[in-house]
Length: 389
Ligand code: OGA
Ligand code: NI
Image (tube, rainbow, N blue to C red):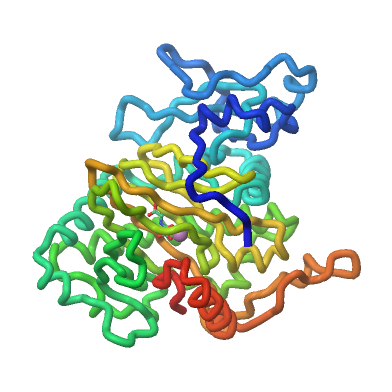
């Protein structure tokens, strides 16, 4: 277990001044990928000052690992972000990766690197229509604004193992607040529609459309993560058995006395998270909490314990938490991807050998969840709803 100080938190700009980051970060670390030949656009005002671009090797590396700072386009109806090129940005925030890059190797490389160093990254230009995101936010907000009795219609059942359904604040976690809805969305045969809200009436249609985009995006990411491990594109997907997808919706009302989600790692393979634009997610790295910049339209990818195990520890399972805004309600939509029940959670055989012994036991998903949940229960620091199979 990592040692951390929950009160220590650092913003990207503070981190730039931090001693650690003045010590010559390895060139190209935390490289961002851009799709087109990049031009500096008029009126750009990058939040991160330029790194020391005079490093001699920078120009050569910049060709291979083009770096940029993604900024929001003024035009919110497009999914495009504007770009500005840097030669060597300091590694101060969760990497932002442009999925519209035509160079697949470059994308896989950036993704693999981010997964090794941070265990988290953001993807932009992923092809999910802005209008669909808007509708997803709308139906989620409408559901949580219903009277309690209507939300209770899809409540988690007492003693439920799957933990599917609506749950209000967890009384076992007095210092955190997290109303949530949670249910399976894919594959079809795993879905229990009794946990999907009937109100608002377009909840089902919007969620199904979002699911189609999420499975596509997740398969692209799995392909890159496989490539990043030096394996064929289909490898991770095969090992997950195609994956079981669950949608969570977190609802954090404004507060200045509680935290949102307490510090935890995700027990699943990986998570694709979007927010309603109210920042609050933080990830832990190098002994500090980093704010994850809230970029409209970006999807945050959080690697969890199952991917860490598959990769035999090469990819990090990132410790993260969420803070609560004092004035605004924050909402997030994590899509959690798990192994299919019965699949083996353990190091990929291609990644272990005499020089590289397995760091984790190989267990079926059910055994793995049983063990992990038992440990988490002991620690009492976990977000238990993440642990269903
Ligand atoms: C989660 C989670 C963070 C957030 O649901 O697993 O980490 O910002 N959420 O809501
Ligand atoms: Ni999480």
